[in-house]
Length: 605
Image 1 (cartoon, one colour):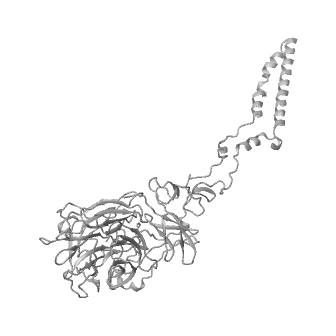
Image 2 (cartoon, rainbow, N blue to C red):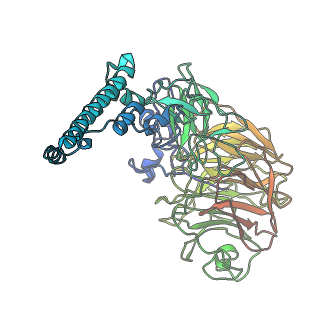
Image 3 (cartoon, helix red, strand yellow):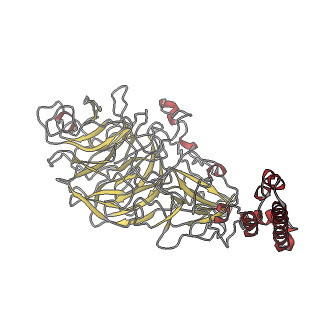
């Protein structure tokens, strides 16, 4: 149900960033040549210059050399015991100071005018003049002797120059070169001759528990306690490249085992690599603003809102026994719903400004899930509008067994208004849950667009199969087979999908072109009706058959209850961090509601 990606082709444009010993990041495209002609026939091939959205989880590769952070100006530098030496000011030696105070200069001798006046006096005056002259000679001798003593007291290596000694005292000691001996704190390394802190880089000292290496936008490259605020981190894991070389997928990345490369893990949008080590980049701690506004929620009966009966219930009919049973949003934030009511069923579109458009299904087939393309990488803001849905039928639902009129995967042709069944199923598939309703627990389920722009659906040929489907070329290819019926799915990352089964299990399934095997994430306490993944935060959400709505961490841990829905239904991820719930309006009542999801990265519910 919650969905993403691009139209009728099997272009697996997975921007997966590989890392090898040379510091590079490269992009990988899955081999989907068997499906290459589908978009051309429908005119649905994405523009070649279309850039992935910033929240795609796999950004355009960045040169690892360019990605190396520069040392932070005024950042962490190794302490130097002699660093204060530069602040010392050169002062004269004590001997120089004594000389200045004790040795009288020429101005200390009696003025010549006074001596001449004494000469004009008596013999006593002459004696006085002689005494004065003797005093001047003694003073000169004292001054010369003090200067000589000061010179002889100077250190031998000063070569008699006291000022050189003063200059030597003023110069600080040379700093030792940056090395592991003086740059050994958590996350530190020598970079361009300076001790800097960036735990992401090769050669950095490991963080000391409980601190972890953070790649989030609040303190990237720092060793941070994971309990403090926004911390984006993950343990490093080895990842074998096709060449056999092992690279380390560090914080903010995960290993894509086929073909062997590190890809971004939410909330990171890209990967940087150097010397066989990779880490996540562009990892925002705050939820980015929505690029567009969805239709208003409204109250039951409010025209032009999600709770407008023309969209959610009977449409233009005066009365009915149902309404939409699934909800999704497209790249322009328009809402799409698929109905399950008596008589013909409908796919409906509600624009952000409140206009409802209705498309009529074929014969008397019911509808199940609807999946709208949200754009490259599964985020909102795409200019493309492609919508798929499922036709369903049960053993007592009066299905007409013709190739064009039976359960299957169908396409909304928005130009002609037709709803052709592109992948009809030769066998009617059904189950006993999660809804406990024969009409709702039938046909293909687990409909979603992957982040590789490919459409996927389960139970197409038999219960438990999971296919990549090309609506344009009317082709399908099995990507996984499960032991139980598929009931829901959503995109997880560029290499995997999350697929829920009617026994409560949630699995990772590979996208088209991957040879990796499915992997169990968690067994939920009840059967999910639907699952969704927050395209920024990364947590998984599920509505269970007992009407509880739960969330869990991407690795299947930290299961928490978010809310209790008023009725059985399905959830959908909407723009701006809202999780929507639509009752399955076939025997259920109640309005469409929504819950706000966390706006800041961290432990979430």
